[in-house]
Length: 396
Image 1: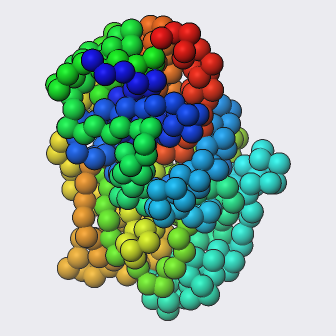
Image 2: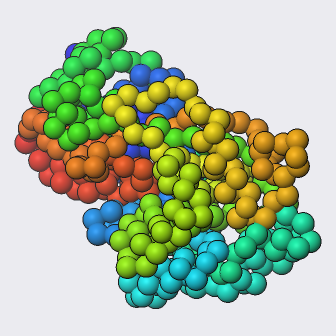
């Protein structure tokens, strides 16, 4: 039985962030991953670190992890950009929420923009060309710039970080290893037994396989997302994430404000199908000229593997309308050149969106049970290791 200071179970972004935080403190780390590389929620998302959209504890964790994201990108040589994010507003009600959010954030994190400034920011002054001469970016009347948000490429960030950590002398990355049981510093796997001063379990929606009672107590279920990859429509040039009216109903920095009710009523009257599929219509540009479009939210104890074409059609229709694209009669993609479609899955709990629990004196579970794992992973990891590090040797 081989020993290390820390064992991390799971090499998604939450697990990798914890591994990096431990290695930064001079601890020996072993990462155990069932797949050959990250395959779950960490690569199936927008690559958007939605720092400005958080409140309370999540805001603190997001801010605490922001510089760690940028440092990790330098260390592992993956693309990360302080591009911020734009929220496109198409009605006075949406602008009212953005104004309220700016007040709540003390004017330091959000810039309000008029229609022309928004169009120019997204298209380098070529807004009139997107979707045709008369479209001018759909019906955008203004919006906001979220200064603190970050962009990474979801396809490459976690795999690059895993490779970088695996190459470090104090970190051992073992892939293709299925963990069977964890308890009191011992981890039984498909290839043998390992021990550590402390084990941190970061398996996301796979938590029930190892700790079913904890998952049941938290009401942990799965959230399935419909997403697509398209060629970035010309002349959209920004590398920033683009959020829309439904985003104001998803992120608590907006959804908890007094004006959000009017936006919800507006969407219910104008496009009820968006609410029916739990839409958060937004865009995540990637450095290769493609753009991630999504997403819907479907909650169940176990996600259905089949994607309804009607769901992605609702998302693409809204996305195309926001950008003012001109679909052809023969196309069902609403003006987008679709390259790929896929299903994202993440852990979800209405009761405990952040499950951080010591299940015994040498085992900690760290599960982000909501859709902001990319946003808070590094801040959460720093907090976890700051709590554990002084006691690791004593617990051995």
